Structures are given as C-alpha cells and as structure tokens.
Length: 506
Ligand code: NAD
Image (cartoon, rainbow, N blue to C red; front, side, top):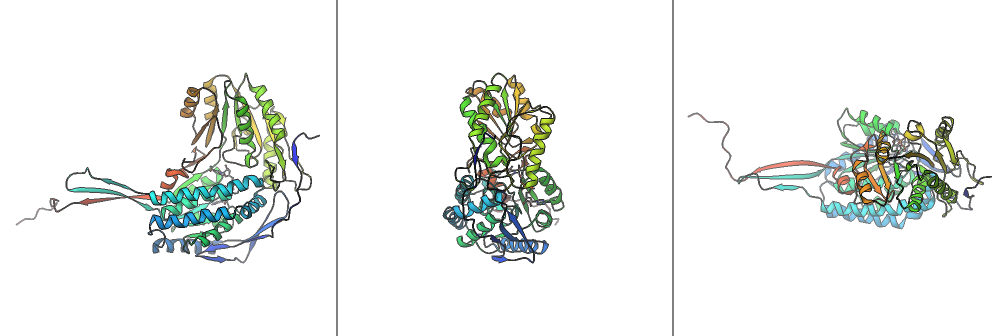
C-alpha cells in the first residue's frame, strides 16, 4: 500500500497538437522533416515541430547578422527598445494559460508551477526594459587638462541562445530580454523536448513589433543546430543553459572563433540544517527544494547536511511532509509533483537510487517509479535516501529527480567542508537562528547564490549563476545585462596640445 498523496488523472480536453515552425527573418518557416513530442504524463503527441538542419540555422544566423549590422535594433534608442519589451511583458500576461498548458504537456511539470513560471517571466521582461534605458558607460575627466576619456557600452552583436527543457519559458526570459535590451540580435534554439513555448514567444515578439530578423528561432537538436550556433563565425556570443557535459562541448566548439561563452550548468545544491534552526520552516523548505519542478531543477536542493543531533527527527518530519505533497496528474491545479521528462531519465533516476541502496544507503520514503492511475508510466515517487556517504554517486552527481539525499555533520567546519566537497557550485543554503553562523556560511560557501533561512527565492535584480563546474558568467540583474555588452574606450585630445612624435629637420 502506497502512503503518498496521489492525484489520479483528471478529465481534461487536451489542446490540438501544436505545430511549431522556425522564425527566420520575420517569417514562419517549415522544414522537409518534423519531430514530435509526446506528453510524459499522458503519453500522447502534443506537438509536431519543423526539424531544423544546417540550412535553417545558416539562414537564421545570416538574418540576425543582417539585422544587427543594419542597426534597426542595435542603434535605436534604449527607450524604443524598452517600449517593445514592455509590450512583450503585457502579451505574456495575456497568454499565460495557453503557454502554461503546452509547457506542462511537453515537460510534465505541474500546471500551477508552469503558470507561475510563465506569468513570472513578464517581470524579467519589465526589468530588462528598465535596463535598456538606464544603460550607460563612464567618462574620465581627470586624465589631464588636454584629455577626455569615455567608456562606451555597445551591444556585443549576434547572440546564440540555447535552452534546456526544465524551465523553457523562464530560462528563455532570463536571456532574451536582456540580450534585446542591450541591442543584440539573436538566434534561439529551445530544447527538442519543449519547443512550443519558444515558438509562442516568437508570436508575441511579432505582435509587440520587434523588427524582422532581430529574434530568430530554429527548432531541432543539438546536432547540427546547437553545434552550428556555437561554432559559426558570424555569431559573437553563445549563452547556454543545460548540462555540464554539453556546456563543456560548447566551450570547446566555440574556441575556434573565440566567441564569448556564458554557461548556466548543473548543480548539487546543499542546505545545511543547524540545531538552532526554525526546524518546521526548514523542513518545509527542504520539501519544496527537492520536489519543485519534479526535482528537475538546476537549483534543486538535492542534498541536505543535517546536524547529527537532530537528523533523525528532522528526516522524520521531511518524510511526513513528503507524504502530504500532492503527486500525480500535472494538469490538476492542486498537483505539486508531476511527471519525469522521459522514460530514459526516469530509469536514470532509479539507477542512482538502486546503486545507493546497494551501497548501503536506506530508503526512508519512495524509492521507485510509480504508475499513476489513468496516466502514462513516467512518474517517480518522492524519495528520501538516508545513510548516504559523501563518496556515493547519489551524493555527488546531479540526479535531477524528486530524490533527496541526507548527509549528517558534527561541527560547523565539517558542514562547510561537505558543502564545498562538490564539483558544482550553483547554490547553497543554511538554516540557523544565529546571524553570525549564517554570515560565515554565506562567505565560505562556494556557490553563485547563498540562501539563509529560505530557499530558491530569486529576483530579476539579483544576478544568478554558478562557480566551479556550475557555469561561467551571470544572468539577470545588472550583471547579467552587462554580459551582452562590449566595452569600448574612446580617448580624446582637447585642443591642439599634442607634441609631435617626429621632429622635422630643417
Ligand atoms: P542538455 O545539455 O542536454 O541540453 C540543453 C540544450 O543544449 C538543448 O537545447 C539541446 O538540444 C542542446 N544541445 C545538446 N547538445 C548540444 C551540442 N553539442 N551543441 C549545442 N547544443 C546542444 O540539458 P537538458 O537535459 O535540456 O537540461 C538539464 C540540464 O540543464 C541539467 O544539468 C540542469 O542542471 C541544467 N540547468 C541549469 C540551469 C542553470 O541556470 N544553471 C538551469 C536549468 C537547467
């Protein structure tokens, strides 16, 4: 008998199969071949997309290059760019439901989370619009009486944007409005598993009046589309979110043209639970941190590091909360944990759990796939694994599923050592009522983001990104915007004071 809270299939009229086409130079373009996406939850075809190849990618890059060089976007005022971005934000809000349903069907994430992701993205567009107007360089008026210096900020050029399947609309909105605010033109490739919400974004961009060629979309796979977007000499920058393995490939592939590369990659993010913490809030945040987006989240808090005096009681509380988490049909608005993106990924998650069990770990909850009544087979039970040692793969690698790994510590130094004992460094958190403990942790944790007494709160104003093998560069915030800008120094002589270098002989 399973003691989870299961939401069985609800009755729902699925939308017609979505047709996705490329957006190249302002026109919707078909390909000779297409590819299909089946809903992981309902095991039925939900989108059919044009399959891009080299020809479509070349055409999209050429269109972005022409648009950039023509100055129709790169040289207009920040105010004019901001007006378009603000219209996109309004259009996103007017279309949340349609986009969210398609995203839920393609990814398996709960509809309430898809609505939050899509609706919340409008704020990223509004914030980027504010940066388009506020952007400025520097002036140097202290170089001597006859000199004046300026540092200009200029758009970097043509940007390739390559996105993953876990937050297709949000991650696109972490990149695209910031690149556009800077004056760049772009080519976007969404994941082959979740292409439709990017196509829907293309519709909104046209409605908002973005000039043709400024944003181009090519649908298809890493090979050849993503690969060409990373190597092409007419592309000035690649911004990629996805796995660390593909991030490394992109770095290598792009080196031939020395284009700028920004990478948002994987994580194995710890939360340290101190004995003096508000344990009720911490247990709730741990539950949220591991099951949000079905654990398929770069910021998933997939390992907790709990003080050994409180470990047993704390894990019992997390297990009790996990049983109350509503798990099942992602189209049910009350569902909190939905389906796993593919059957292969479901098997991979299970492999980590089996290996940990074989190596001596204990399964405190869940521990296997589950068939939800009336739905497809791609579900994995909320799972808590205890008795884990730091050397086990489940404690070191990104499982990317609803699987929590529990480690314990005795001293604060040990907690810090365990936190930093990882190839990744995306985010880390601590729960303590002692501000000194929190601040020391914030300084010593090797991570791009540190949360104290909270988890996964983010704001467009705050930069996001990772250290170590979690990535390079930053997204969103003022720092993320600056990534899309080049810096040019202008040195000016005032008057005719320069002494000649060549002395003329009479
Ligand atoms: P993935 O690396 O498999 O694919 C990401 C994108 O890269 C897809 O569009 C894919 O088609 C494309 N791609 C594949 N091979 C390519 C190649 N050789 N050249 C260029 N592009 C190529 O990642 P995924 O499975 O879609 O996403 C899950 C991963 O993304 C996880 O590791 C997760 O941690 C990471 N992620 C990181 C962040 C972050 O901000 N740090 C956010 C979300 C997801």
